[in-house]
Image (cartoon, rainbow, N blue to C red; front, top):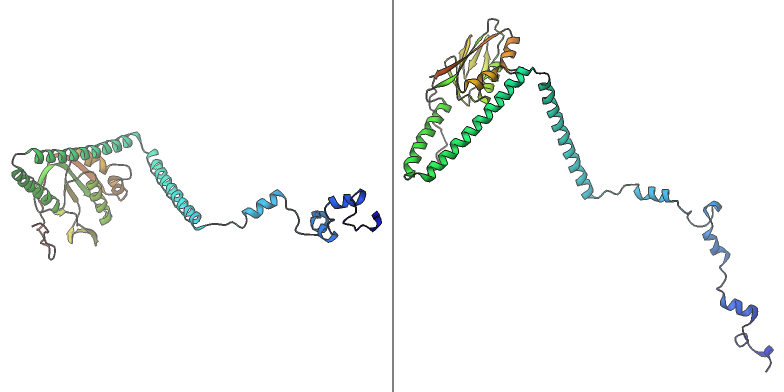
Length: 287
């Protein structure tokens, strides 16, 4: 049988037929148009540059709930730090303009307060040691209870007190001193360690209130007139500087044309008393 009668599958693959058999099929013209470059403006989506892919990845932002909570917490922390720095800056600027004598006085007052806290701490530690080491703890407890009752009576104004302190007299001939100014003086004295205060025969306690009454001042409803005389028991070297700090009580009253006199004394008697008030509903829970 000759070669002309052989089928295409049986004919030997030589030359062009063999080349076509080994090469892949031709790509249709329609399919090849999908790989045209962006410059042709035809085919599928244009090829994006690196910058365009970066922009598409960052915008619009995809914020999760956890990221939002962390952002809010960081904002709150930053705001708190900013407020703290601002408050510290205001305090530093106020002291920066003070005189050297005023700075020394303020430093002495801070040292005095620190010493008082140290003394109180040492006293509490001594009391604990006595309770632990006393052979008769019940008797020691009764003594401490009586002493605590006396101290609370002084604070409540039901017991007279005496000790070192100061006497402050305010002459208000112009009638410009108001109740809030006297209240500032009381608060400053308490901060400086005052243990008992009496104003014109009225005992000052934790619930004391002051109000303006015509051209005078009322303390707990009791009208007092000038000169306003404060009897204060406490450490004189702490009480006196506290009233004379820059922008303090003395300077404020001086701006109102009032005269302030402060005298130290080794013995101040505070004898104005308050009646012990019995509670209507509260009862002791101890059995």
